[in-house]
Image (cartoon, rainbow, N blue to C red; front, side, top):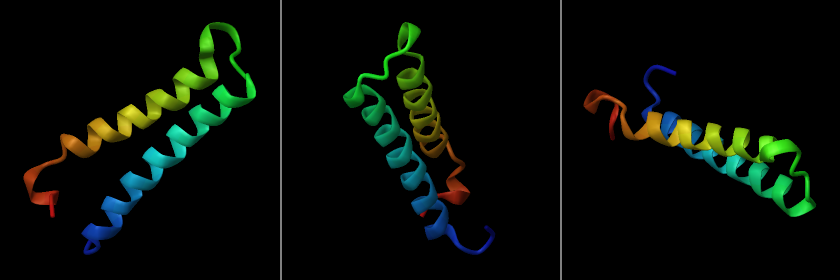
Length: 62
């Protein structure tokens, strides 16, 4: 959203917390599936969001 850089920071934090919480929930209830698919997919999206946040251009950093 243009003009709201702090909102973008919180969006990245929110998706990271959401995806790590999803992976932890799958792990705690024993929903492993074949090859831990539900856990790795949620954890993968969390890592993707973290990498995208770290590699953002300097013009978008606060």
